[in-house]
Image (cartoon, rainbow, N blue to C red; front, top):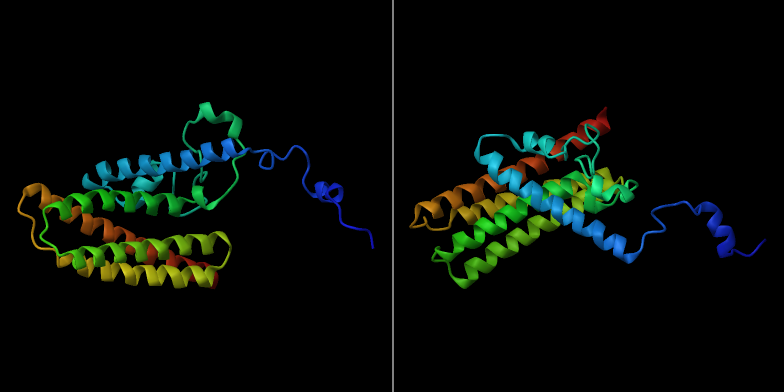
Length: 215
């Protein structure tokens, strides 16, 4: 049997493979682009959700449809300055649900931080809220990663556990004393709405994966 060599290995990966030629600098730019899209979605969500648009509408509007396949998943918006990266690899960082969920968590973190500034919670209660947010974030990330790997049953498990984690988080948020300011009341309402959207996202994706398997 012939010894394995890098020369034979290269036969499986032609020299014109753009992904293999990416440098660390290219990957840094790729990561920053993902972060930029998360911020862009968070901004669009904050403005349009308050105006009555649904999460699904906002996802379509920003080029990150929840139902994959409706649009190009990454870079669907005009991005001529990044034309040299027209063959971007598909990773967790440009998965629509990853972008959407991270954006919603970003919005929740911002509102929650300001809300807690005027909420008379103990250190223990604040820590419990932070742990619940971290747990929910972890379940969603694991679910998206499982979907990306084709592990649908594992993804359903994580989405369902994520929905349960959001129920727990919502209960803790509902125990926050009423803010003294109008702005605080609005932030509390927004935090609740974000949690509802994230929970519903988990439930819908769990149900959709079951339907797809049965179909």
